[in-house]
Length: 171
Image (cartoon, rainbow, N blue to C red; front, side):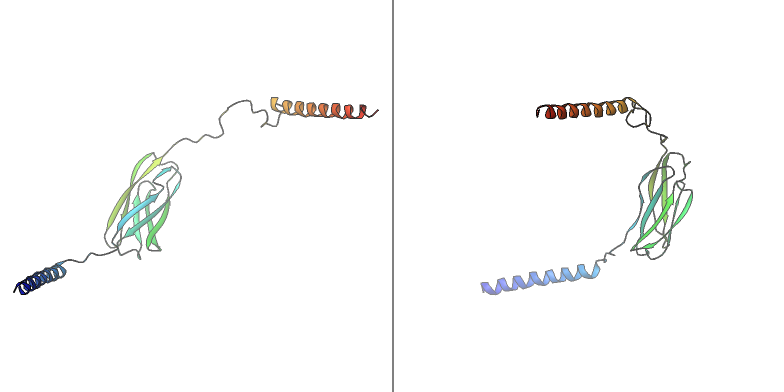
């Protein structure tokens, strides 16, 4: 009787688990794999006058063009399908004021995304800084040139004295 009771209990528990599993499987909403809406600007901080690349994703619509707009590059850029993503590029004008600019993606399926692009406007030096005499670097006769000529003369004198001693000891 004891074996029969445990067999019935086990059957009841397994039956209940089966009903719960059937309920969960029939009422669960399947997840849609691969959905992703994003926009990336590389690099995300640039000097005014530089070119940026844009990469984006529009869920399952990466096989259609999408539009990107930003005041950073003064208008819109069309992104085109490229190996499962949407890609394009833009140039930030050289006179663009420094600051943070939103970059907005508008997908053909109605999805949107945005990111920020930081524009820098650092002044670039026109030539290297003045750090010293630079005698060996210039075309004139600076102190470096004189040292080089003096060193060569000293080596020639030492070599001449050494050769004379050799020839003098043979006699």
